[in-house]
Length: 272
Image (cartoon, rainbow, N blue to C red; front, top):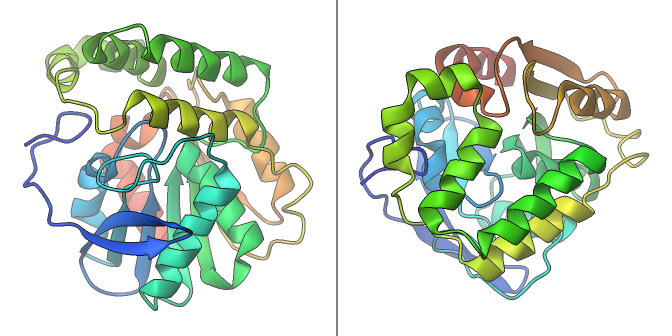
């Protein structure tokens, strides 16, 4: 079995909890303080594999299939990042985790923002990866492109389109074989759920709502991110008191994979 981006892994045994009117699937790995991992648009929890291998050495990791993905329920949309944050709040409470550390990638970072706003008593620290506080014009256009083309292209064609948005040209040049193989991995997010998740991304807006947050926050971004560019992370940092910004120069939206070892090392140290 391979994950969403082509990494070899053993198919995980998933558990489920009922939360916010649906069933959410998750896996646990490692021990220590709880760390909840929130994935981005169109991917399931398998996309966490290369981070889980490191994070589980230090934390009790809970990786989750978002609403609409993997083995979680896939109700009709549209979804919202606030509603998806409530999914996570219910999961955290159902598992009796107390305050948790959170890492959210892209849409997952948007969900994490809403989780911290709506349920601050549940969030100890958070890392927001390639995320944004509001969907500005360029990013909105990209999400609309994704939503429209997802219904027209084959899964492999759409996977290639997505790869060319999130990886830098240099990464594609040097990893074309594994990226080509990853295009053949069947999607676990059906078209209606992808549209519903896209609606959540398009409607996300936390501007002016995070000023009272006291949750220590690390924002990471690729300096060459052409999808959610650096200015979006700078805007996000300006919305959260005492937030830190870590730039990975030369990397793109997927900087957490392009510079995997450095990203894992830096975020694990910060999450302690």
